[in-house]
Length: 400
Image (cartoon, rainbow, N blue to C red; front, side):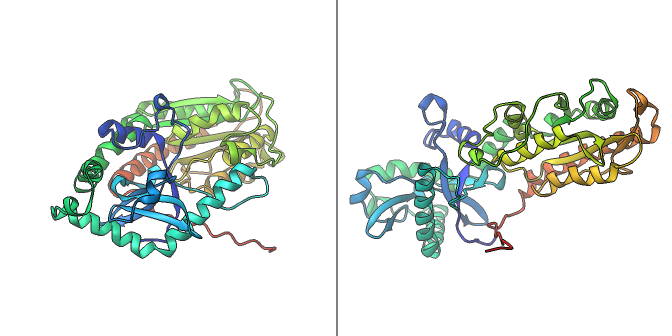
């Protein structure tokens, strides 16, 4: 495993809470402690082929008098202490629990957000300037504890000795802790094989119409495989399009508090997403497009490896264009696209006619089976190998 350029990451709060339950010296972010809105931030370093997050903290008064040690580093910019890295509190992580922080200052950022991003950029610049030293520090610390070397009595105070006990857990027993924490995390997020969940979005304005018939054919297969489903019908709702205000970048949700924000947590919790729409002028329902534009753009969580499938329903033509249009939401987000024995389409004009499309319904059943297999395979792969590594995004504008 190669150490990539350092980035600041936010750690999933549910994962932190699970680790906190295992060892209460992990920083708690529970609502009971009033810290549920405080993100757990840190840099990721590689130790013995495992990823560890070293917490990045705001400096306190006591830190000004402290010297750098093997378990503690001060981040200084132009002679001012701007942050600290606590190696003695580093925790094991997997890709599923980390999300890279966006430090690029955008025109819609408010003053607070700009200030935070400017600070993060300074801290990150320092970390990358000292990346080799930080990586060596983490690995020296790791090796000292693997070897059982006792050096804290000579080099550290009683306070450090007390905190060091966490390192014994987080480093020498890190993988068992990680396994236990991840298992709880996956259970809570319905990632266990027997708790798969598929969210189905029906873009038709008609209740019980041909789009519903197609989705119900899939539901039967999912139910037989032990996969839970929830269908949300949005085609008959008043849902406006995105106005490019940028509020979601600050608040983590859309400025219009409607079904988009109601659906967002269900999208985050699901293992697979099915989006189904009737065809209007060789395109998806306009309400569906407005809904999906805002849902995908306003949600900050990582969508990688959630399985996506699109379903289109029409009297005759325009299906391939609509099918292609809907799949683009998945492929820009790292979501694998489930396929069937034919393009995922069902024919029918008046309500109920889709029930006569034998091949179309068979295509829906095959799609559900393939989707179930893909979701379970990905869950097994995550548990065994973890998610693919991600490089920092490099954006190249055509006009600069």
